[in-house]
Image (cartoon, one colour):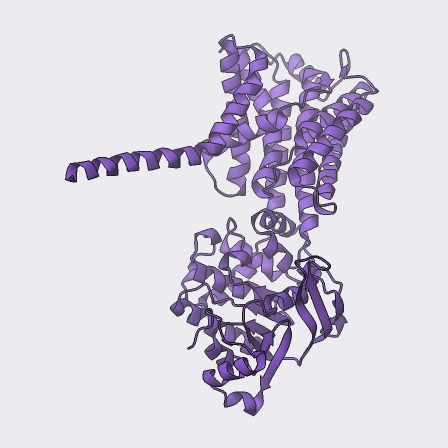
Length: 264
Length: 312
């Protein structure tokens, strides 16, 4: 499904601030894989997402999605097939538009937009139905402006928006990190359910090693712009949080000083 | 203020309301301070007057709208494809338009339509034949025609903003990130928004110029500020609501602005002072939330400090 071949990205090349963010990285994801990504700050996790989604362009290498070379495709065209969530719940929704309008906008992802009405009765029923699965009472608030909702509610809606037109690939960049523990749990469970129901190929960045091991079927660890550990199957099943931390210390050959890691 | 001035204020309010409607799209919906307006207003006026001069008043209105849209697209291209800062992009187009507007007017700084037919002529002929005159003793034609054009523009803009593309344009000003990740090219939605905004402004210039039978290369100076003043007045009166309410607020704001101006002029204030007045209205209105917060904080501080003294 996703095939990343030897990509590299350097910020501020040929200056004193030169920093290699991604170093000759390759990754292959079969259809339906749910990969969790862990790694310290500055390991290149978010840069990897930016390169896949097209917010940044690679310096070298190739990215293929669903058999198509997307290496030089602009971000909005890649969005035909990629859904994405950020840590900041405000990033995924248009605050001055209503829930219904936001969902309608997302529902047309990957399709051409015309001068027909943005809202339709048929969609309204469908939106109500999927909103009710969130169990947040939002199905009765279709006409409320999204800006009036809480961070957790907005992130749940963003998740719906990213998956309402089923994407080929879903990128989740610490999408529960800014939420309170209860809400984070809810959004994470929702994520698992939607991904499983629609069999979406997913990559999720997280700092929570427990959920990294619990979610999905594969875990990769990044350090210094590359993948230093790739766990799947039996090997992954038997790992505990402690094991992962030990592995991380060994692999990265440095003390584990990342205070954002939640030992949980 | 007499009845004649009042009717004039409403007519002008309806015409300039189209400028405010344009700014509603660019400033409120797209969240871009678009300074093209000073130029595209005059462009609309120049095109409409030149076409009317040559015997095509209605075609002149249509071409004025298209010319305004083109001006908006130029600003949009500067902003999106060439990454010029939005404000500078508008200033560049506005400045370039000054020269272009004089080309349009055959190298002259102003053109008048004395003795020529305008879009108002058939209405005037009809009303005169029927013997209908307003209580102010003025013809109805300006009021009727400006009302027709302004309502048509409001309806079209509101309907457009409710379409799928309209949604995309609205979301662009709200959260560009989200727009791109919904597979929408945000460069295109900005172009569309700026085209519509300046099309409306061009229409304002066109309708106004034929009504006063005159176009002048400098008639657009300060138009952005006048438009913003109307926008703010309208929003104070009608508040923020949906798209329809927002668009109607522009027209109401513009009419009130013109009534205020007529009122001020009746107090023997020089017409040249009006720009100063508009600028002050906009500055105060935009900074109002900040000022309010500062005053509240000062009051709170004084109250709390006083309380502290009591306990001491």
